[in-house]
Length: 107
Image (cartoon, rainbow, N blue to C red):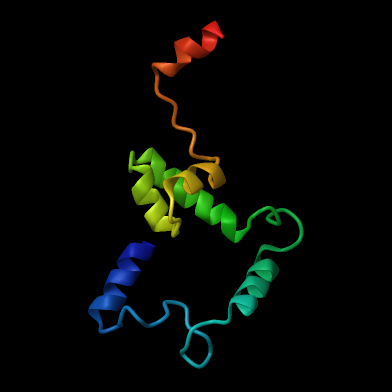
């Protein structure tokens, strides 16, 4: 089952938008420090150590960019107030217009 389908089913069963998707043991919002620690433990210190929460943000930005969404929409999704911030921080946004290739060859 996809994450979207799971979230839709959860919402249709009465879950509210102000409730956490991944609650703590008491049903509330998770402490960010605990979440970071558990994430570090889950990825380990070897093969997957390069994966960070920022990696997921970059991946999301890249997927949205490849879907040809505007920089403004991507910035809104990532919580950036300025699209320029999204372009500067998420360097994976590397869409290049085909018209730019010949100009680069000349230089």
